[in-house]
Image (cartoon, rainbow, N blue to C red):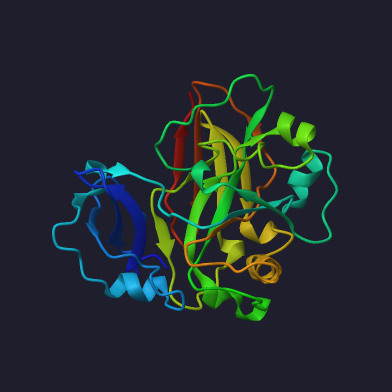
Length: 285
């Protein structure tokens, strides 16, 4: 989709400290610090609407934030009602931690309060032996989804971001469930803006390569088609037991190469492929 007009969605704080939805438009490339943004109304007001259609046709809000992306304080690009994760969705990652491959998607929740935008410093909780990075592709829900078949799943996807499902291995082992292990404030860094996709757009997972590095040392490198359960299957399984609402997000699982984190390091997650996505850069304190 390079060379085509692309629409991006995010949130910033205005000069009065209020959080505002903003839009960027590019020629297919990811926005940068000099990219112009403008305030728009909420793209998720209509649960049956499509965010790409809404955002592409929205008028800028008079008096709202407008200017260079670099001139504004970023917030997490979304305010979801639910943040879902998928465990062991890449065979090589399950193997590296000595875990079995699940027969069906292994789902968990992360609290929305864990989300932070790229560039925000994340304070690692002290007193834990190992906290890992987990670079992931993140799916954004655009239309209300309840009991959706895999064949119909794509029309419920609004777009994509990159994320880091930061995880405490010690708490995973101790608690035997993952609420604390993956739920600390800051344990969900996301791209600064979400790449919106047209209604029914089907992601070419084989063409999207996910890479993660720690202090510029490569850690993870895989294409999204290595997922055990692809995106349509995940939406089918999740929507069979809960209603996905516009703006909800799914961390789709991490490939092999997870690495332990320490204060002073910088995590970088980026992707390669025809569908450009904004990277995630996270300084650790």
